[in-house]
Image 1: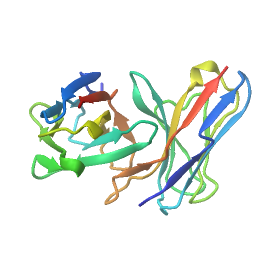
Image 2 (image 1 turned 135 degrees about the vertical axis):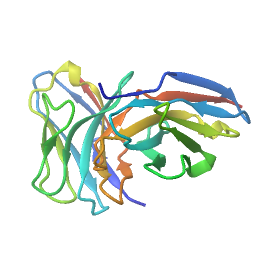
Image 3 (image 1 turned 90 degrees about the horizontal axis):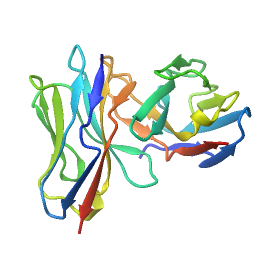
Length: 114
Length: 113
């Protein structure tokens, strides 16, 4: 069955530490892959996307993600987190036709301790 | 910056009542979407539209209708609201080749009592 899995419901890190949020997907073909962030009481905003090419993609605010076809993963990383990065992060896939019908993971709540 | 506006921001409804959630976008996007967000599930697609006059069923359409009377407006309708429809609802616009990014509204918190 098609799925998007974010295995960590909550991640806590200290300010200045590095970060990795995990995402694995299960689809028959390589879909469009996204990371979105949701700040408190706001809608979602796109951080970055991947479809083809360099497996490491850069996003906003110093975030990057690496696609691995062999591992069916699209993990999000940041070298040094700031307290303002505290939010809920969603991995999502577009189901092959890039028409916005996103399938989201359950989300990972990131808590950054100052 | 693209703008998607939802109304109301909060809504309390009674079981069996009719609820209409409204969404307006000023991005001139053809595609619009309604998602609901529940803890442990992320966002799930309810209905979507490729343009004025069109609506399509998403992954969880049961109990919901949608209406797209114009390019700018997309409504979600609960004809007979149930407590299981208590959730946060998000409208989005965008998607499509060369425009894969979705722009989301701030959400509508619906409580069905």
